[in-house]
Image (cartoon, rainbow, N blue to C red):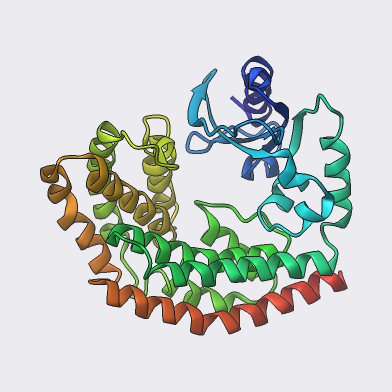
Length: 344
């Protein structure tokens, strides 16, 4: 199956199912697959992201990941009020790129296409790029601050992890690139190379993995995670926002996608999603599983974190301080990238 056929499956799901949702207002295909040519083979470790727009007076939906006609779809929704004006979209670092590079596949009210055209026209303007970069920067700081307020160690790890993983997003937004999720480090590395700023990358990656884990060690932790993943999926009862990522459908991305990164020589970059998935499994165990199940995997999670130099909440706080101290360098490089984009 190629990219065009996968997109057609997404369009058919919207036509057959999403259009029947109360308050359905429209939909677009978002995500990294929009940057791939139609005739390229659809990656087995990827999904098609669909954003559903719901009228303001109707409830949002979050179907998550599921298979439809052989294609893994990930469906999210937002309120029409979230994208009421082009300015609302242009100032938001996720929404601007999502709609700007998206493919509108349903527009019954004939307003999404016009909104998209205005976003595309103003997307590269310096004032909007600076606003989106500032938002990405503040998001990192907010996540560092959130570490201390989380009630569970795994949730503290998640706050630290997404603070560190937000740093590549600052740079990608500055360079008008897609702030992708699982492959954010690879995308940032490639972009820094394009702008001659590659010297920043090793130190940025060290915020995640300061020791420099070997491919064998990363594979070891992924092997353990595979069993953790399968068991956690059987216990989910609570309405976790990430529940679909721990489903059978999500396995291709979380497990197989991580193996693919390791096989391609991107083992340290794979650590981000391995830790995220492991932490989510821990949250499931400690919320929905018997104590015996949670205890069984605590040591495995601790072993992964130990290889990253994390033994306690105090280590997470120190790593948060490292992120704060690194951000001025990041913002300097982001400014250089924006200058280059403006000059071109």
